[in-house]
Image (tube, rainbow, N blue to C red):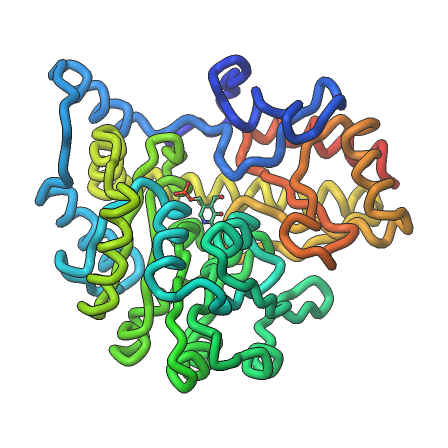
Length: 386
Ligand SMILES: Cc1ncc(COP(=O)(O)O)c(C=O)c1O
C-alpha cells in the first residue's frame, strides 16, 4: 500500500504551484495553493528508482526514445484503454501543450478558425492566438452542474474557415469523461465538415468511469484525429516535460511532425523518457491506489460541504482531481468571491473566468493533496464563504 497521506514540503523547491503565487495572485499573502494541476503527492518509488539508476550511469548526453519505451506506451494503451496503436503512429514531444501548439500550426493557416468547447483549459486559447488563428467558442451545456456537448451550437458555428476542433477528453475543468456515443456524434460532424480533431487525452488514466479514446472508435475517426497524451498528470512527472502524440493518418502525421521538428518539440529530456517507461511498465497498482485516494478526497470534499450546509456546489467529476466549484448560491459577485477566497480564506484556486469568460462564480480546486491538508483548506473555505 502506498502512503498518500505523507505530507511533503514543496515550498522553496522551484515549484510553480507553491513558489510562484505572487505572480498570479498579487499581494495576497500566506495562501494555501490549490491551483496548478499537479499533485502534492509523492511520485511512485519505481519511477525515482529508474531515474536514480540513470543518474548512477553518470552520462546525460543527447537521447532518443528506445524500443522498450515505445513498446511500453503501446502496451499501456492496450491494457488500460483497449486502444491498439502501432509504433509508427507515435511522435514523442516535450509536453502536450507544445505539441498542441504545433498541431494548430500544422493543421490550419493564419486566420483559420479553431473551435474549443468551453469552459476549457486556458492554454488552448493562448496557442490559438499565438498562432494567429481565430478562436470560436462552443459552450458546453450545463444542467444542475452536469455538462454535455452542444452539438447544434457547434455545427451552427462551422464556416469554410473552420479547420480544427479541440477536444479535451476527459475534460478539464468540468470533469466529464465523454462516452462513445457523445464522441461519435461529435466526430461525425467533424468528418462531414472536413475538420481535424486535436484530442487532448492527458487526463485519460485518471478516470473513475470507462474511458474511450476518440481515435479507437473507428478508422474514419482515427483518420481525422491527432491524440495527445503523457504520463505527466497520472504519475506527477509534469516537470520532466515529456509526452507523445498518436496519429493514424500518415499524411496528417507527416504535416504534424514537420512542425514538431521545426519547433524542436521533439527535444526531450532524458529523464522524461526514463520516467515514462518506468510508469507504463510498473504503474498499474500504484495508479489504482492513487485513484482510490483521489476519489476519497472527492467524497471527503463533497461530504464536508454538505455536512457544513455550505452553499458551494459541485458535481463529482468522472475523472481528474480538479473540482469545478460553483459559488453562485452565495449571491456574491465574482470578484467578491475571489477576494474572500484569497483575502479571507487564504486559499489559491483557479479563477473560473480564465476557462470561460461566462464562468462567473466558478473556481477550480485541486484536491490531489494529503487529506489532512485538504481538510484545512476546506475548513478555511467554509468558515469564510457562507
Ligand atoms: C487538458 C490539459 N492538457 C495539457 C496539460 C499540460 O500538459 P503538458 O504539461 O504536458 O504540456 C494540462 C495540465 O494541466 C491539462 O489539464
